[in-house]
Amino acid sequence: MSGLFKKKETAAQAADTQTQTPTPEAHEWLIPEEGRDQLQKVFAGLPGDVTIEVYTGGDPKNLFDDYARRFVADLALLAPRIKPAFHGLDSDMARKRGVTLSPTLLFNPEEYRIRFTGAPLGEEARAFIEAIFLVSARTSGLSQAAKTILAQLDGARSPRVFSSPGCPYCPAQCANAIKCAIERPDLVSAECVNADEFPDLSARYGVGSVPHTQFDESYKGIGLMPEERFVVELVALKDAERWLNEHAAKSGAHGVGTGQGAGQDAGVEVTETDLVVLGAGPAGLSAAIYAERSGLATVVLDKGIVGGQVTVTPVVENYPGFADIAGIKLVEVLSSHARQYATIRENENVDDIKLGRRIEVHTPRNVFLARAVLFATGAQWRKLDVPGEDRFYGKGVSYCASCDGFVYRGRKVAVVGGGNTALTDTLHLHNLGVEVTVIHRRDTFRAEKALQDSLTREGIPVIWNAVVEEVMGDTEVRGVRLRDTKTGETRDVPFDGVFVAIGHVPNSEQAADLGVDLEPDGSIKVDRHMRTNIPRVYAAGDVIGGVRQIVTAVGSGATAALSAFEDLQQPRWKKDKSA
Ligand SMILES: Cc1cc2nc3c(=O)[nH]c(=O)nc-3n(C[C@H](O)[C@H](O)[C@H](O)COP(=O)(O)OP(=O)(O)OC[C@H]3O[C@@H](n4cnc5c(N)ncnc54)[C@H](O)[C@@H]3O)c2cc1C
Image (tube, rainbow, N blue to C red; front, side):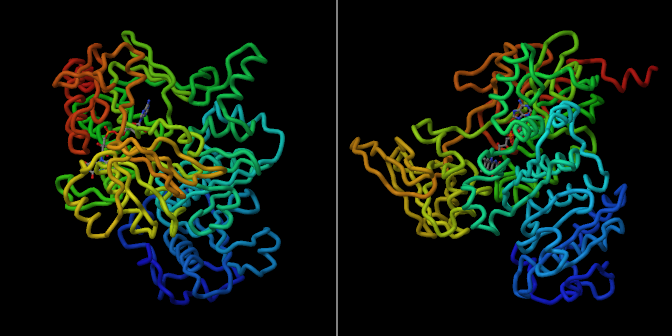
């Protein structure tokens, strides 16, 4: 990240307080060449003009200001549709727009109220690029269900999404807010805040985990939400589940879909396909490539974002072909390969699956009629299951070090666990400048030796033979109560945060509801062809247990796709040929 900063006055910087389109001559690029080529191609399809106003303060040494100016200047040179304007924080325009923080970036401010507070670094750059597309198209792209709920809004809303450059879930939550601002420009303004850059603002709203969405002064939501859920919470200013129950009780009818199980009445599209893959992690992406190449029309649905657990893996060092690669980069490579073949739909929460000659897969936006379905739903973090854990989630308890680590710079945290994830998280936090202690219930680690050696080299303390009995605090985490597994003694140790990394549990609930057999540990039971006990229902990846690695996930994903192909016997391409 810091390599991107160069303390040099640019043309854009010199031209403070005036609108100007940079010229390619003598332009010093910030975005690397490879990225520029990609952006130029995708920006070629921008349907409308996008004005981006950049507001920065007078300090030439402010690296965030410099980054923001140069980033937007680069984008404008890559896309004639992007019209930049650079203004000082003390300009009349800043006063007119109500801009007080530097850097601030506004999109088409005469039409919309969409604002980025802070430099769009790392993952935030993705949100920024998505904002360009949405504003350029001048259409929200919200589902019909979400639009129906948002149409009921009758008061002003200003959702503020706090994110961090290392959080892969944050861009999609920023996009939720931006889509609402485009759909209801009369009432909604959206702000994406780089929480890392504005610690005071983050502290004011008690940001302990990102994405953190402040819907109004008192109501907030933590984590990435399906867009229907986001819209319900924006309109109702309460938890979507609660609102739906109240709504259903009042009207006697079922509510509007929030990704939580209702709402097939509002503009749902029906799509016929051969295979629906649930989950766009490595297993699902690999299955999509193999299935489509076999001739099966395939749709991949993910309730969150593409990439699964790999999106939160700082570095992958054991995937053949890449000696070491950032998790997010590997996701890019895998997903762009899979997208060459199959349709991948993110933020698509499956409400219901009905078995039959055609298997029906329902989401709030779509019904897919498939000949086969594949569970590549992976695994989610295992919880400590102790008092205080849920209460302090987002207020000191976290499961994602790469997302939330920045909040704890210079503060004291515990990482609980002893496997690869725990030690990777520990080293990541240590590198960020967090004071980390590992708490492990045994006297040896399960993690790879290379990670253990790094921990020793860095002199990171470990509390051995200890389990967390309680997470304690007041408005936020203040410490943990530990029990010594050898002596049974308990003691309280002060911490500002607790990162839980004690393994994962398989996401097999929906499969179990269909009648799919599970193993005693909750993973889906499959044969060596990845077939479950139900015909035309398959499973692959972490959800089937065993060795939980990227390489095994992609292997089992491919096997499952080929089994589906074999079982369906009459693939589409054969029919097409004979037609
Ligand atoms: C911090 C960390 C570090 C790791 N490091 C490594 C490493 O260095 N090397 C390595 O090989 N492995 C590593 N792993 C493990 C590796 O990431 C997993 O084994 C791999 O991602 C499993 O792939 P998957 O596709 O089976 O599942 P996942 O990656 O878990 O993906 C499952 C996807 O399914 C989606 N989903 C879940 N339920 C539903 C539903 N009902 N409908 C639609 N979508 C759904 C999820 O949103 C998710 O995107 C690491 C894991 C973590 C957490």
